[in-house]
Image (cartoon, rainbow, N blue to C red):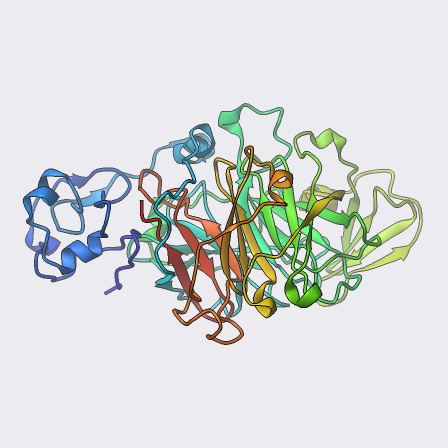
Amino acid sequence: MKSPTVLGVLVTLALLAIPGSLALEDEIGLPQCRGSRDEEPAEYTCLEQVKWGKCNETWVIEGNYCEEACGRCEGRAAVPTSGPLETRARSALEKPPSSACLSGYGPPETALYVKGGLLEEESGIAASHANEGILWLHNDNYDKKHVIAVSVLGPNAGNIVYVLDLEGLPGINKYSDFEDISVARCPFQSDRPEAERTWCVWVGDVGNNAEWDKGTFMYVVEEPILGSSIHTSPIDRTPRPPTNPITLRLDYEGYGYFKGPNVEAIAVAPDGSRFWAFRKTTSHGGAGPAAVWESPTLTDRSALQEDDCRMQNSTWSCALADRPYQFLISQKYGQATLVGGQPAFSVRSRDSARMGVSAPLRLQKIGSMPNPLGPKDKRNISGADLSLDGRALLIATYAGIFEYSLPEPFDVRGALGSTPVELTTTNRDGSLKMGGGKWAGQEGVCFDNTVMGTNQYGKGIWSVSEHHKKLYYLRCLD
C-alpha cells in the first residue's frame, strides 16, 4: 500500500485502517468526492486529523473537511477538457492566485520519496499547469537528456509516470547539462486566441561552471496532456519524443559567441513572453554580485531568424541564421562545435521541419544582484521560479530559499537592488544551515501550482537537492 504524503498533498488515506477513519472496502455506495482534492482545515492537514482521530468531530463533518481521508466519499470526477488544453490550465493565467503568504512558511519537510530509478542527481523542478498533480524534473550533469514527470497524487504519488526524451534535438551533445526547468505558455502564440494557447516545458542548458565554449541552449517543448488517470494507471516509463520543439541558441551579452556564463537558474514568465537567467557566481566568496540576463519578447515568431538544420548519421548540422558560413555540429555522443562551411541552405529541409524550430536568441544583461545572505560558501544561485501573479521571485541557493518582492508584475529588473526574505532557516534535510554536507542546500525550487482550489495553490513551495531522491515542501501557514 502506498504511503500517504504530508503537507496538503493527499494521496489515498481512505484505504488505511486508521482509527477515526472509515475503510472504503467496508462501505457501499459512497458519494463521489467533490472537487479535485480534500478540503483541509486552515491549521493542520487531513493526514494529521486522521491520525488524531478527529474525523467524527462535528466541526470536521459540518465543514466538509477531509471527506476522502475520513472515508465519507470515494472517487473524483476527471478534470474537464476543452480542446487541447485542460480548463485548469487556462484559468491559471486568467485568475492567477496571490503569491502572498502572510503568515510565513513552516520548515522544509520531506513530502515524497521519488521512485522509478531515473532520477539520480535531481536538479530542476517545475509544477505543471496542464496536468493536475504533476511535477517536472530533470537530472544534472551529463546524464540522458530526459525530462521526467512525477505524480504527487493518488496511488502513483512519488512515482515517475512519464518521460520526455530530448536527446534527438539540435545542440544536444554528450556535454549537455540541463540546469533548470520551468513550465509556462509556449512562446510565439500572439496570433492565437487565449483559449487555444498551449503550455510548454522550458529546459535550460544555460551555462556551465567552467564557462567554456560548449554552447548554451533553451529547449522549449509542448507539455503533453497526461489526463487524471496518470495518477492511478499502470506506469509506462518509455521515453517519448517531444511535440513541436523549439531550440533557442543563447548568446549572452558580455560573453563571446557560443560561450556562456556560470548560470544554473532560470525563471520564465507564465505567459511565455520572456525569461531570465541568473548567474551562479562564486566571486567574492560567493557574495557576488550575480549578473542577470533577460530575453527579448517572445511573442512574434516572424521576428526570429531561423536556422536550417539537417541530420545525417545521427549528427545535426545547422546552418546558423545569424552567422553566414558557419554551422553548429552536434550529436549526443560527441561535443557541439562551430565549423565553417558553405553558405546557408537556400531551402528549408525536412529535418528542420521535423525538429521544429532552431534559432539564435540574444540575452541582454539587465543588471546584477548581491547573492542572497547566508554562509559565503553556500550563496551560489542554483534555481529560480516566478509566481503566477508575477509578484514574487524565488531564488534557491546552497544556503536556502529566498523570496524577492517585485515592484510590478514580472518586473525582475526592479527587484535587483532589493533585499529578499529568507524562507528557510534549516537545510531541507532538517540539519542546521551550516551542517548537512555538500548537498544539503537547494538545487531546484518552484511554487506549488499542482492542485487548484487549495490554500497552498500558488503559495506552497517544492524543492529538490541533488542525490536525495526526495521532494521537499515548504507549507504556507496562512
